[in-house]
Length: 101
Image 1 (cartoon, rainbow, N blue to C red):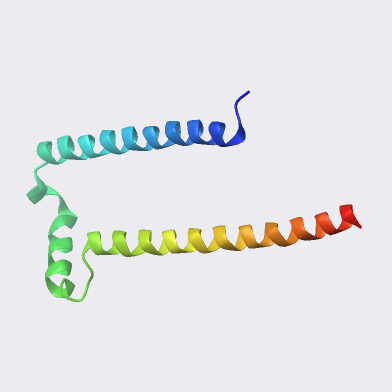
Image 2: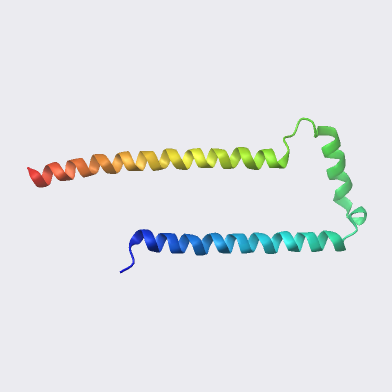
């Protein structure tokens, strides 16, 4: 019989593979689209370029934003995991006391 951990691992593997496949498809689509579009004819591109030129030094780079937020999410998940494990430990202690007592 498949254990819960094995089922979770299998689902996780499928989910991660789907996310990666979707990411590849989106990245490929954006690459193709940008090769077909003349950005000089898209009205808001100039506005974006002007904004970046005016505030670029004050704004973080997109890669920095991604890294900082994923690092934060990782820390939050670890804290939540620790909290949940500690909480379950306390509940198990009380349950064992009740059963033994």
